[in-house]
Length: 136
Image 1 (cartoon, rainbow, N blue to C red):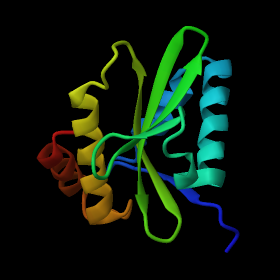
Image 2: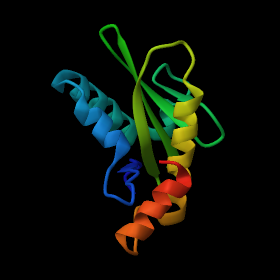
Image 3: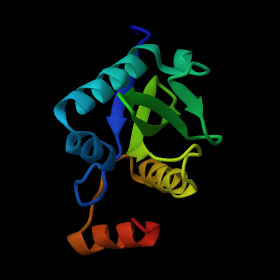
Image 4: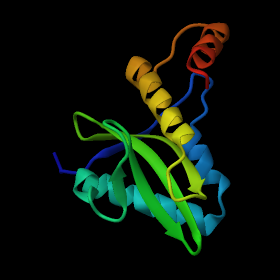
């Protein structure tokens, strides 16, 4: 093993990836900067903890901090055994505290990933029911 982590994004039953969509919705320079930080996270993983770039928010959820000029972005993620980092979501930070709703959303996405590991079976109706059950 190379000592580097694998990065995976939470995928919803409808095929959408909230974190990837967030990054891709930003301007090219900002999305490139966030992708560079995600790459750094892939290489250094939990060795980034305690730095100004990565912080533990809850027992399971961590944030990657990215500053681009006067804007601050957060990418939320969690670790899994086997050198895996799963990215749940992202947002632009507008206040000092990380909004509780963003943490709750990341925890819901983690729960979804833990149950299905991005492998969904069943009909579109069953997949829609999964999203509704989690409030996503």
